[in-house]
Amino acid sequence: MARTSIPPGVATAITRLASGDRASQGESYQQLQHSVDGGIGWADEAWPQIVPLLGHMDNRVRSIAGQTLCGLAPHASAAVVKRDLDKLIKATQDERFVTARHILLAIWQVGQTDANLRKLLVAKVIDRSAVSAMDKNGTLVRYDIHCTLRKLFDTTADPTVKAAAIALMPHEPDEKYRKKNLSVWKGT
Image 1: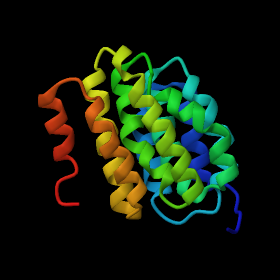
Image 2: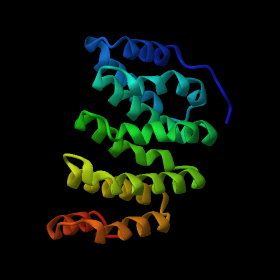
Image 3: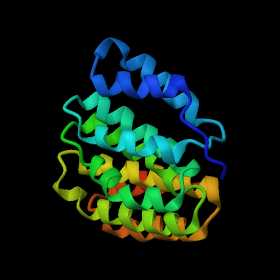
């Protein structure tokens, strides 16, 4: 992967996001999400500037940072992503549920291109499911985990992803939600 410097618009968006200025957060979010859509060579350079924002005092900044990192992951080197994967997983337990949920629903992108990262991500997401019983919205977290794993499966066609998700089914304590989680996998 050829490395290039961070485009000026992206660098500006990161700086504006880090400032915590609410008025520019939407624009920064749009700029960052648009920028990570294509094949990029600057992911490794931008990554260390965005990771600290996972701890920002503003939950919207944390959410945008997490979603941006997830979008950058397929373009970044596996070593860079692996180094901070635990921070991304921890962000799926953010004190603000909406922040945690946005990151959880985007985290499938981390396992999109690298098989070793995918295996590690699936293991960490399964572990996240195991501790979801302590969450206020644990049932919804487990459903989101199934949605995340389904997106990863749809993108990679890796049967181990589906097998891991199906193995979670018996651990859902409520029959109604077991059926709902299973519905995510219809058609596969």
